[in-house]
Amino acid sequence: MTNFSPAAVIPSDSLTEDVAVLVEKMAAVRRHVGTMIFGQPRVLDETLITLLSGGHVLLVGVPGLAKTRLTEILGTVLGLSERRVQFTPDLMPADILGSEVLEESDTGRRSFRFIPGPVFCQLLMADEINRASPRTQSALLQAMQEQEVSIAGQRHPLPLPFHVIATQNPIEQEGTYPLPEAQLDRFLMQVDIQYPDIGAEREMMLATTGAEMVEAVATMTADELIWAQRLVRGIPVGESVVEAILALVRSGRPETSDVDLVTASVSWGPGPRASQALMLATRARAILDGRLSPSIDDVIALAGPVLRHRMDLSFAARAEGVTIDDVVTCMCEPLG
Image 1 (spheres, rainbow, N blue to C red):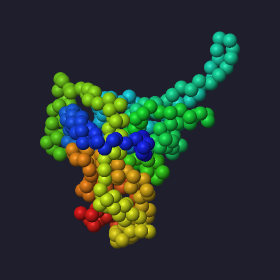
Image 2 (cartoon, rainbow, N blue to C red):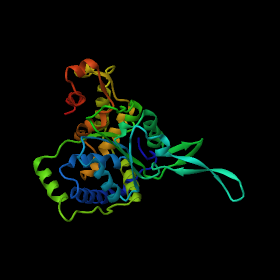
Image 3 (cartoon, helix red, strand yellow):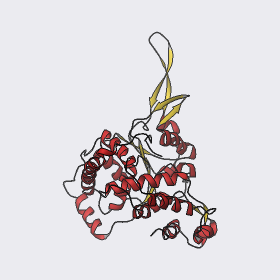
Image 4 (cartoon, rainbow, N blue to C red):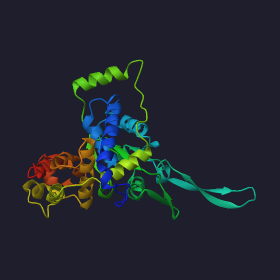
């Protein structure tokens, strides 16, 4: 789920100064990306929170909402090597991971040489990930969790930091393969993208159809992002926030929940990775807002994107029109 060892923390004596530096850097990133992505501040913030947390993000939205554009811009602005793979039904695991080829030298000696696939980058965009077969989807599991891939029994480490930004189209589900729960759990957040309001759409229309367009420039480097991810892990978290995270996640499990809508509608709830994701994400959100520690408001704000892909509704609940977001809202009421 994340790129980092828990042992990589920041000395407390420099925490305040380091956070102030990072706040300025992230403000510059947000301003610059905001000149090219219109009307989606929440989407941008949640994506940046995921990257600061060292995790992977699943973007869900209809075509034309700048999912691909956002990934390309973030790759440039954050100084990351970026690759894009269009997932299709005929895509094979080797098309993502790479493969070994048999070569013959001038002396006639034969040997295998590994040719890295597009996964060997720092920011991989898996476009329309649910259009590939389960076999191909599962090729990303080891890469997302362990930052390495195994080919012919040999392990090949990926460059760090390594992040996957995957996209899904919520419509046109014919011919798609829903992501298995094990892979969904590897995404720190699922960010749902809505249509922009009329003002943002007007601004976007004028800015993107003129003679000149704003070009993305590097605002951070890969090393600075690694430093920022270490800093996030060093942010202190109060006991009240820890208890709120545990209470929220456990209330999403029908076996341990005292929320009526959960026990009546949820078939399975979030696992321990949800608690880990919320702990990291609340710290990153605090930094993004210029604060030294997270609050319960951060837990409530991030409950949706962290939990919505880690829970599933029963058939009866779906038939009655219940949604996961309805359930998460009920789960958050005792906290707010």
